[in-house]
Length: 467
Image (cartoon, rainbow, N blue to C red):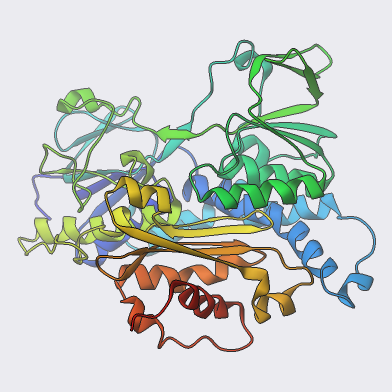
C-alpha cells in the first residue's frame, strides 16, 4: 500500500456487493475498508432476498404437498403465521449484523461505521473524518421509487422493507405494483392469511415473456388474490383509525389495514458527493465497472443501473475487485468479452427468478427483446406439465417453457421456465447461453428420466434438428 493513502481501496456500501468487492481486492493483496451506515450485509440480508423468501417458503411447501395424493391428506390445519414470522426473523439474525461484521474483520477488511460521501478524487468523508484511497468503489444499491399519487406519502405506506420486517399480518392488504417484489409479497401475505388486492397498471411481470405473468395471474386468482390489471389509484388516504382508502380512476374505492407500495427502484446515487468529482447522479461504467471518465472510481451493483439483482451485483463485484487489484498492481486487465475482469453477462445472460407459485425463471433475452436487439430469432414453447418429471412432481402440474434461438449463430439467447420449482431448471439454460453452446450440441446433453429437465429435449424436438 502506498503510504500516501489511508487505503488502497475504500468501498462505500457494506451489502453483499460491497463485501465482495472488498473481499476480492483484499485477496489480491490490497488494503481495503468498507463503509456502512446501516447493517453490514445490506438490503438482501435483512429486508429483501432472505426474509422475503422465508416468508414465501412455508406457503409454497403446503401447496406442494396438497398437489400430491398421500401428502395432501397429511396436510391439515392452517399456516402458523407466527411461526413463519419467527423463522423469517431468524434469517435476518433479528436484524443484528454482528456475524456479518465479524466476517468482515476475519477477511482482513476494515469496517468504518457511518455515512460515506465523496469529498474529491480518492477522498471519502465519514462523519468528521476524511479518508484517502487509490481507488473508491460505490456499492450503495438502490432505493424504492414512490409514485406521485395524491395522499400516498402521508398515508404511511409500507415499502418492501416494512413488509419483509412486519411483525403482524394485516387482515387486508393492498399491493401497489405488479413487478417482482409486489407479486412475491402479495402471495406471501395471502398465504399468511391477508385478503390481498394487487393493483397493477400493466400485466404482471411485464418485463418477462407474456405467458409468465398470465400464468401467475391465474394462480393468484385461484389463491384468492384480487388482481386488478389496469387499475390506477387517483388518491390514497389513511384515517385516524389507521384504515387505508384507495380511490381508483373508475370511481370505486378499496379499503385495507395496510398498503404496500412496490413500483420499482432506482440507483441510490443521492448525496454521495458526486458533484465533488464532477459527476452527475446517473453513473455509467465500463465492463470492469469503472465509472466512465475516471481512472479511480467504480460503481458496482444496483447503483450503476445495469442489472438490479443481488446475484448480478456480486458477479460484478468479483470482476471489479479483481480489476481494481490488477490496475493498482500494474498488471494486465482482461476486460474483453467474457474476460476475467469483465462483467459481460450483464449484457447477454442475466438470470432471474420470481419466487411466486408458479415460479418464473428466466435468463437472457425475451423474444421481444431479441427482436429489438436486431437478432434473427425463432422461439419455441412447450407445456412443462406434459413432461413426465413434472407430472410426477405434482398432480395437474401447470407450466410452460420457452427457448429463444439466434438463427444466425445457432445458439440459445433466451430461456423462460414457469412452473412449480422451475427455478431449478435455470442454471442449465444460463450455462448454455454463457457458453454459446450450439443447438446441435445441446441434443447430446441427455436429460435424466424422469426429471423436469426433459423439457430441454421437448423444446429441441419442437425446434427441429437440422438435416
